[in-house]
Length: 334
Image (cartoon, rainbow, N blue to C red; front, side, top):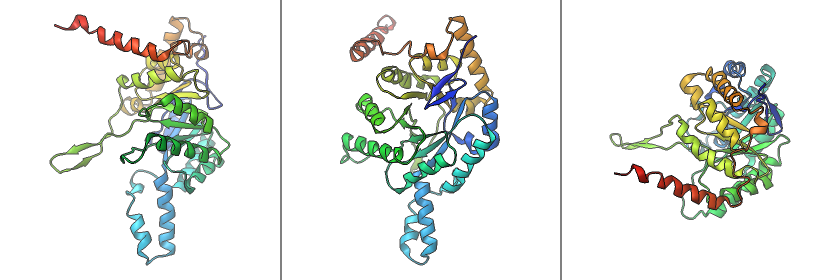
């Protein structure tokens, strides 16, 4: 019988299909449906640093009503209540979810600084979160900020969060760092026990009629699997951290690919948004059927079988594959 069990952040999971951070986790009823559909763990939607700061500023404003300082500060932030709840309500949701379901609940904290808000990482753990995903969403726009400065700040942030919690911490990264393997190694040294590859940044469009920015969130496709697939294969066995692959996971075959390059789990959101939570069982059945057909008895034994762990020089290997891909078009040219 095919064994789909895996491990991630010290947690034993019944399969490698994890719900990525999304609006699905805002309601307890939906979290219950995810558990029933066979999903092995849920990453909650993110609590943003700005929400915690906004909450604190609001408190100070009401305590010192009449000063312009806090009223002005509050105007710096978007109407956060439109798309998320406050920090105290987030903590209460963790408690309720842990009481209602048996699958692990991973809290998500989205921030870029290491100021006082990191204490909420500790509060999330105290509320019952099984682990914490630190979601780094920061786009450097100043030419004065160097790559080394940006990475040093990230390392300091992970250290600060790690110092406040006793549950495992994972870091959700973007693919845009210049030396990702080195950064991954430094993050593990700073306390990260898991790496999530990759964060999908919102790419804004522009409205040429209204002359304004149009923030657009598009669902992923399986084509986007290639980027995290490549980097998971490179990092597997080279950093001492669990790996979660996310972006572009839509089928059971995508799950198989994620595990074969070295992922402990694959995180899914877009497929559920597009086609419903029932897709979870279908994806797992497709994965299990494929493994049975090709005599793979367990996820654990299959993991990393298509990674670059055993390639002596991965950089040369990548160059060779790059050239091979380009040459494959030779016979297709007129």
